[in-house]
Image (tube, rainbow, N blue to C red; front, top):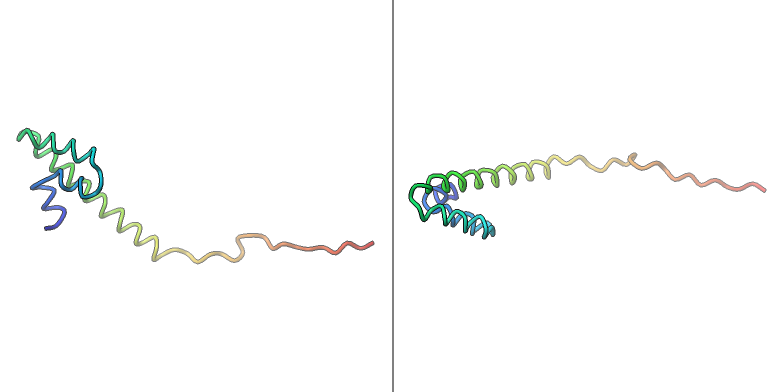
Amino acid sequence: MTPFKLAKILPCAVFFSEARPVAGGMALLLQVSLVFWPLAARWAAQACERAGIERLLNELSETNRAPEDPYRYPAVKKFRQVA
């Protein structure tokens, strides 16, 4: 089952699977009342969407990372002391 479908059916499970127990408990309290269930479902769907976007951005930044610039640090010049 995809996280988006799970977010609609059981929003608290999404937060518990992401190791966010406080958010999972709050979503569970919202689920207890049927009136606030859509609010909890929307919150869980947004959390899934945000996690997917962050994962995609991290992947893009890893693949498009510029190589280390060899001229970033100035060359160390050693001078000979002439006596």
